[in-house]
Length: 458
Image (cartoon, rainbow, N blue to C red):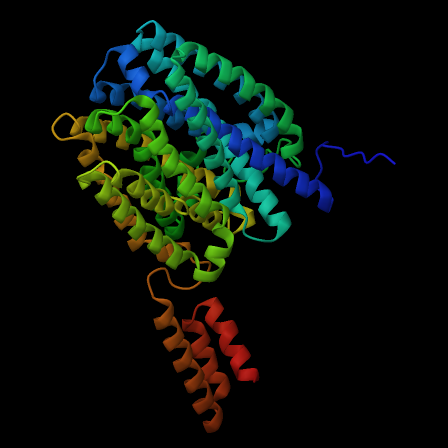
């Protein structure tokens, strides 16, 4: 008997089809991680090939962030108009074109072509990112458990593999051009084969909210009015900043500040990524045990330990240890933020696009900031700006809770709940239960009302 699995669009997938989709989406994340790492692994070579300084390289990279910002204006509309299948398909080819352009620019010292290529790298990534996160959220809802950290872990696995290959080919003396073209063709071919399995439905849905041209900015009057969405956006900004600084500058700092070669720089960043992968893969039980808020705060402390150690380590053997702390701390910010944004299925797509815009803005701000600071202080000390991201994540952590007050602690909510129960009991004893409970319920959050009712029934 031959088992036949159809990957045609469906709105009522079977259990096995959802499992296949999970594997497919995991693969998409891993492939995008490998594509990103292909570029990041040769950052020192690209700087030297272009003949620019760190600050000038940062300026060129801004074109990438600008590309992502432009793409966000049409990603929501494009997904609704054409569906995630077509968006993922065409962005595969645009990424291949873009990475080849970056390779050609580096090999021929053409900064203008590098800027254009990086622009389209980020455009392609933005389209892919929104589409695959939408599919990941759909799979998570179908499986009815928190698996979003696993998808982001898969991205990090792809980054680790891409960095490993990058370190190897750099050590072997392979040129950037041939590295980028070969990796681009291979990864694109695999991705095109995975897309049908990864996407459950993926057809156009013009009626969905937040799908006009202008993306999250066009729907700002709706989504950005929600204070929780904005605060989650700042957490995504902080998470992106934490990862981005390590991705773009860690290997280069190892080369400039410690006198090591590009391959060693890639290995240190690889340690960061492996640490991040490990925590992300076990993210669901970690978050389930500690909760979103506590997980975010512990992660923020870990990042601060890592970056302080990286910036002020007196000996090089402490640098891999700093990369471990930094990577572990950077692991859960993005998946927790995106999961929190998608808590309400009705608004999930628009809110995912809205908070993703904060990640893009981080891309506009972070590279030039660190690059310009590196003109005056050592690069590893310039990277201390990541502490700002950690403090932001720590302070705003309560905004990722599913219910209750954004700023009131859980202990305070429990005290309020206890007081509500006492008032209820006193009112019942006095014969005024209905009036007292009505007043209490009017002031309490939804979750507290349900708990109070349950206590009263006992």
